[in-house]
Image 1 (cartoon, rainbow, N blue to C red):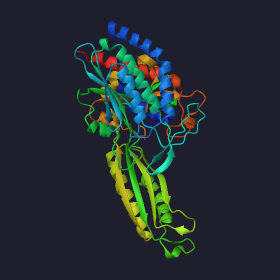
Image 2 (image 1 turned 45 degrees about the vertical axis):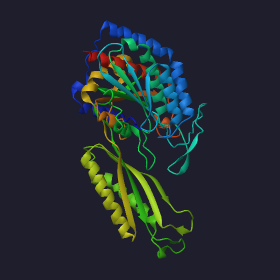
Image 3 (image 1 turned 90 degrees about the vertical axis):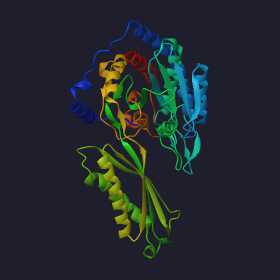
Image 4 (image 1 turned 135 degrees about the vertical axis):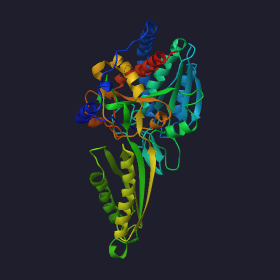
Length: 447
């Protein structure tokens, strides 16, 4: 769900506000044996390119919504078992976890995470592996599409698992592969995602020391990585508003209380919260109405209208202000129209925070892979990412891998749109990043 910011001004501001120590990384130092191992892994990864692309295309063509990733999970489990990796299924409903123990004694437990779920979107691309899958989401029929790159995340982690399993005897630690369902949030009334996996103890037995995650980016160039120490993405709250009016004939609106007109006024009133009540020079914030439903006939004023939306914040005080003002604005406008309204607000995703020490330690790994100028520091984004729940428990480092198609502008292939596309030539670098981060961390912390 995370979407990396692409504003050049934002990049420059973020860089100016960070201390010099965050910008200049120490040169990477490795033992001769570690260098030999990395070269060997790269050779194996290069040989897997066609397989990784094939996995991604198969998953893309047969997407599954959150908590429904049954076939995707089976494909992953079969692959891991064939590699001799210990596999646990049904974690967090449909999640898959693989455990690979290295051949050298001691060493840390490094977790690598990929999300598996697709979105309720009808695909509009002309891809030969385009999804035509349909399903039901929250009681309504919908198309299903991998419109955020989770299919690529799964394929790259499957590739990394094969590479690391090929060199298991030379690993100084244990790797836990976490294939997570439901990152985009569970259907109404269900639990899911990273939060549920943490609740079920996925970071224990054995206890994870650090966790790495990557997100493909359709808005940045192939061959680049982007990252940020500290806050990466926003807190995500979902709100639901139900307006209760009085039904009447559309030709006699004075005999009823119109929840649609009242709802329209509420939509406009809510827009003033960010623009007039929040100190936006301190932090960014977003309030968006994503759906508005009412009525079923042109000449009947319905009794009820509902709307749902999202709140994105990077500051707890601003978040609390948003919650309070939403309730105040909705109640006041509904009362003024003679209607009543119910407001419920639920927190879906915590703020994703990269561990600053771990980030500083691992950035040289990405710089060695892509080149110093191709590892870009970025500002916090207003997207959300439930990797946050893993990073709350253990030190985490989450980064983005560029995959913009060369002939497309970022706006033409945006995440969460029916036109989303990525350049598959980016996958090789993504696989290597996961493998290098794992080995480098193990070597740096070897006892």
